[in-house]
Image 1 (tube, helix red, strand yellow):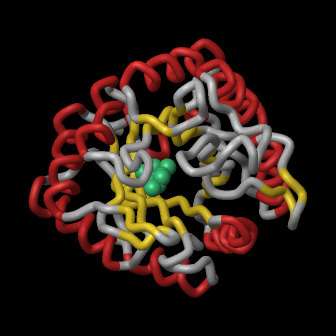
Image 2: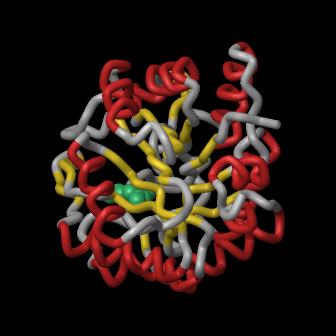
Length: 277
Ligand code: KMH
Ligand code: ZN
């Protein structure tokens, strides 16, 4: 059984077609991209969607169309974003939860995000967490700063668990937030409860490879994709999200680690029918 969960953040809200011509934008492009990534070894797709002109949206119908195109082609776990894009209201951001995805992202704290602020105050976090609990959607806690771990644990203490395990994603290298130094990842991993947690991580831009290599060494999971990094090498654009997956699979096999299939990832994360296991 595979032990490495590869998540692809293939679309994002900030990456443009101008910067990365291979960015999937339409529902069909996203469906095809997810299937290629699944073929290459990915188990999960962190999903953002776009309007036809490429601008980010959290519109429920646009999410539904993309999920339909993904489902036509693969069994990959779909994790919808509730982060959306800068400046969106909480109500806008919450829309994809109405579709009952298996998982959704949840950032537990406000973070500096380049020149902007990614706003997630206590009221928003509580609302998002309880909505996920109510719909049986497993949150992935998106952690940009260490204090956000304490915020997530506070939510679990106050409102009870949102599933049999807590799943964490450490997002390192966003300008203005924690960088992708190995010591930062080690510190964050040490900060989550040892029991009852699973974790992944991603390095933004030039931090992609350092964070990936540290995660493999620590026995963790990895996230990658055009939301986080558009390059294969310095100044060399990746041909597609699947190319980034292929590289991680090659590296992981050198460490005797195998990519988990979506169903194996469901078992590891105790999602759906594996929740009671
Ligand atoms: N687009 C970023 C501002 C998430 O998906 O949950 C936030 C983000 C996080 O992408
Ligand atoms: Zn995202």
